[in-house]
Image (cartoon, rainbow, N blue to C red):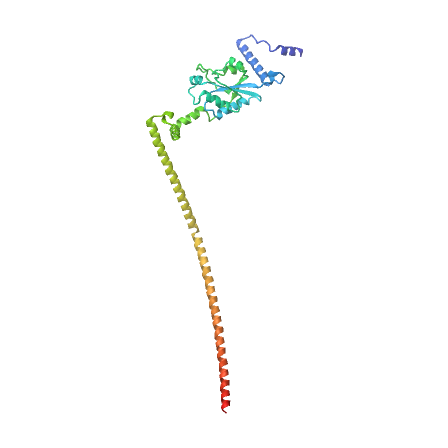
Length: 318
């Protein structure tokens, strides 16, 4: 037990001298132990308590959610990670990769507004070196695992150095989105974007197009506007015809019901009218019968009175 503690206090055993390959393997394993101790040590001291400094680098042109997701992975690679993001300047980028849409300052500023980024390192080197890691106290370098060509233009991977040190943290690329994809979309619909910017007030000089091309695009833009108006008119006419056809269909479907309903109402009205007329005629007939009966009664009374008068006249003569 004492021997074990003594060995631990004395540090790692010297590297084996049997072969160069074994010596390299031993150094790599020793480096892994050192990095792991810094990342996971629970002991006291300032070194053990400080955040793990993770470095990610790139061009970050037309900053998009694919960039943000890779930086999120780097930030979350440790619970207490401090994320430094290096961005290459225009000179290096144009030399080794090609022209960018955004300037270096614009790319730096885009990174500063990403919530996963703690610090932006402008003018980042194309190849990560030991001097750069030591200067910024970088513990790990985060990037996707695909080999990335170094400044020499050969197939050598710029992250090969940190991978051998055991300081490489792999992140996953987001499928379906990249700066190249966005640029390809713009190139594919180039005329559409030029026409849109011409309509917004940009000059042909601003857009880098010739006089003839500008006129041709403006004519095409006018024809497109006319086609859109004709299409809108056709759609409105089509909607009206659709409404008329729907109403006609509804009318045909309901015509029989409407006619039957009308006839029922008409018949009911005629029946009511006939009943009213019949009742009025009956009332008139009843009224006329009562009047005739009164006249007949009056005539019989007059005959009786006349007979009494004649009898009285004869008695007077006698």
